[in-house]
Image (tube, rainbow, N blue to C red; front, side):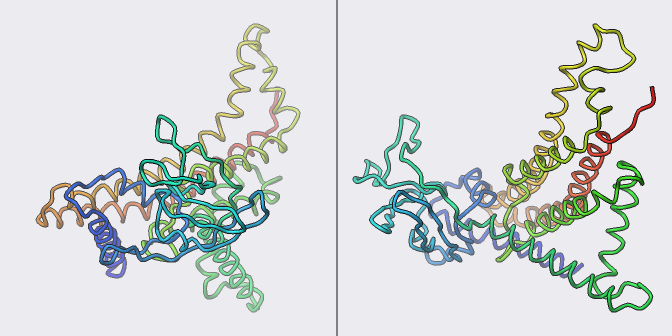
Length: 357
């Protein structure tokens, strides 16, 4: 518990320290600070020191009109306003709000190599971006951790004469049995659950590990992967695809022509049931994204109280609430992984359910 409290306190201190150094003036924009910490980035920002950013760069990989271009994000020199020019293979690029654009030949009135519309949004074209951003790096890292965890667990079982788990397998086995007995079998049924266990286990552990990694404030963690709607959308689409292909004739019949009802009622319910097919994955996508993002925003907002009040006397209250919410977040991230897995199993099971008429 002491280590956990130290970790949360370090999180509070590190973010506060970074934010205080980022704001040279008395004006402190809470929204900008929060968005800076929860959005994707082409580098891992550590802190600011003497007005200069300290970060770990990540590789930029672009497909341009002149072919593949690669370079380090450090070549932008921490610029995110489109004022730093990087030229490779005769093509110039700028980075603006973590988006990479083809640079304009001349600067605008703000000193940016960009052409802005009336809403100050760049109209420059973009190359195809395959860069390893902070979120992509975190995703690969979580995949590696999963392979290591379950590879070691499998090795422990292979060395056991009586099938008794040892080492890390003592941790993974209860969770695997929980997903099997409390999620897969009740929702999909004993007849078909084994086919979908690999997906459900991958889903649960993948989401849970990425949720936990987002709570750890230092490199190589800290990325808000499950708080990115593109990531949750992909997971929801996979569940939608499995549900659609697993659907039986009886399942589709209940959607488009509900048995046992008058024809007018069938015609009334058919479009509603059809919309429900798409509402389910949308709700999955938004639920995970919103809950994880909300947790990060609340913690960062509590930390910001120190700078909003502009007094150190608010620090004990700010840090105290931050510790409290962070402890709750450890529970929330597990619950969200469970809910996503549970609903996925429920949707798959409902598509395979056999009805008696």
